[in-house]
Length: 399
Ligand code: NAD
Ligand code: MG
Image (cartoon, rainbow, N blue to C red; front, side):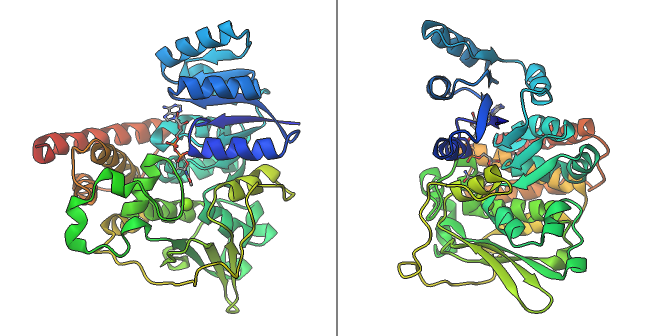
């Protein structure tokens, strides 16, 4: 049995991963679960899956969990130290890692798994967006096996030839006859909303995605379509795609999860009900298809499919991300950092929905784009951009 670590175990992707594990007992031994502070949820998971190790990034939460486990006589070892977690990820206790911590907080652990040459199931798109070439170089150097979990990238991966699948991060798309990667996106909850009403959008409205059930941050990113922008950058790195090889298509029904267009005019699409357990089952199964627990599509009950080009007036975040993608690594790091601060501020009702893109653009405009040489340099740029975004909020946006 392979040994699986689930990072972000208490979140939406964590839930779906554990659900697929339940449907396929005997496939993985869960040796490590990591999260931030949801003690009760983690305690329930410890009782059910008895991992050898648990990591809580919040020390108070770790202490509470230790007390609960003691009362129940459970022997999971609880870590609360990042260095210990990074070492554990590189150890023989772990073969495969579901990287599903949200945001930049997942960068170090995802990179640790990559550096150690583990099998990495990549949900944490922000880690790749912010570290781009450094991340891909680390994959090449260590020989880590990278599997895309994001439904679009998973769909694209499924539609590629085995040769391209084996060279993820360094794909020769045109050499294998690929003319375009067609990245689909639903357009989120505000596809039809009059633009004049955008500044009054509330967090409660924005987190309600019409087709997918997800964590709060990615739900807001889906409403602004920054999520599709991050996915555009993610696709650039995973599939070594040029600007000409990437196209975004609005497909509100979320049935086609993305497509690959070949030079002979063929288009291969991957379809399914919009549920993350399907791509997660694909990556956990590896070479073989396993149960996801999700029904297949019912084509007679499926909605009519429609397609359109994205409107950048409606989705300015998408335009910012596309522009940043080929500007230089610093731009995508700043874009991601400023967006994380903006989304948090919007969720706390400190800024308006329309100020998310304004804030990201203002922070991007403060810096000249440049190459990033190391992870330390990357983290420095990330912190600077966060400070700049917080300063603008305090100075210009807070009422
Ligand atoms: P979520 O908010 O539901 O869960 C986040 C998880 O990360 C939680 O377990 C939380 O405890 C953990 N976490 C946060 N900060 C941490 C820290 N500092 N240290 C350790 N753990 C920490 O988020 P989600 O929707 O599950 O998304 C997770 C990642 O997967 C994101 O990068 C997202 O973009 C990506 N993703 C999600 C979906 C989806 O359907 N939810 C789809 C595609 C990609
Ligand atoms: Mg996605």
